[in-house]
Image 1 (tube, rainbow, N blue to C red):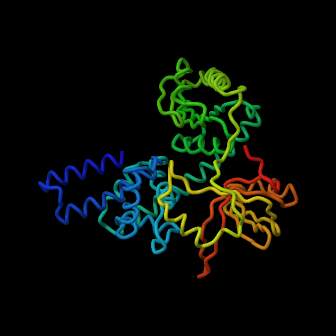
Image 2: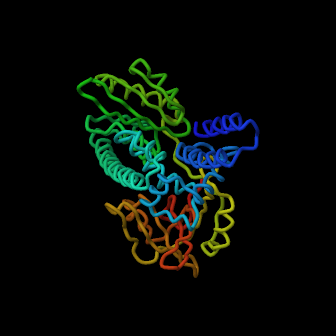
Image 3: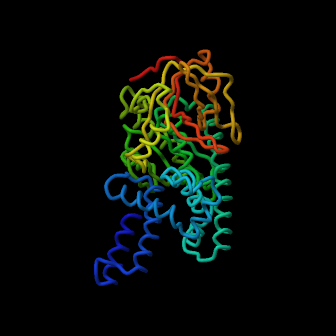
Length: 389
């Protein structure tokens, strides 16, 4: 949608100018609009191929050189350093969540005002507000995830091929993110429902995995639903409160019927190459950077390193000790590794005496003027040799 809007603006500008070559004012307007097109394309996780890739590449360049006033203020609320360059990941993980938080918890018009204001003071006020909204969203999200996991255990739903959970205290604006997080963790389709007891209705959001088209699954269970819509990987629905148990039964039965052996396929990671830690050099990172921007359908290279040994004791870090940091060695090479949202897996990591293999992407960390190659862990196995499919 953002790309289409940009192309429409481009065509209108040419009509206004009466030629393909545009005057400076219209050209500047379109370059500012390219920032917004890139923002929308990244935030909505569209495939970064062909025109989309071109728009994002040059939009990020414009973003870095001359960001819109509101976006510049929002960047000030993050750890992004524009002098080091702006990447699609910065938009996806720093900017987009703050923009989306307004619509999830309050009114999305706040974002419109941020993107259109000409007042530096107002831009800073709005950016600070959105940053606070995002922090609130993260807190709500973590609480719901914890409650959902406890519900799975207490109701003996852990082994079902698909998950449907509902609660009256769950914020409707956050349940889609929660469903996505649980899919990543559980490796099966998940639908999260927020119950409105006054209206006797529940609003739901679902996320799926390859092998089960969510829109087709909901169509097969439509007799239990008031409304539904979406696509293969994500969908929304409305259902009457008393129909939830019947819908859960029908949905899980549909999933079991459509999965081989009645179970969801085991999650797997597509790895690009197995490399030694000694190959993680500045030169390799420079080569990887040449393929930016990365995003949907053009992911960063994922590598495997085996026969590794944890050095010392891994350290939990972050709010609630959700993340993990540790040193890993291979032969004479030592590298720092960061495992986001894996703090709860520390004991698993050390279960084979610290021997492990890691799936990861490399990154460059700069601190106090020291530049060092590190790795971001995607997953691990507590064994010197990887169990590959």
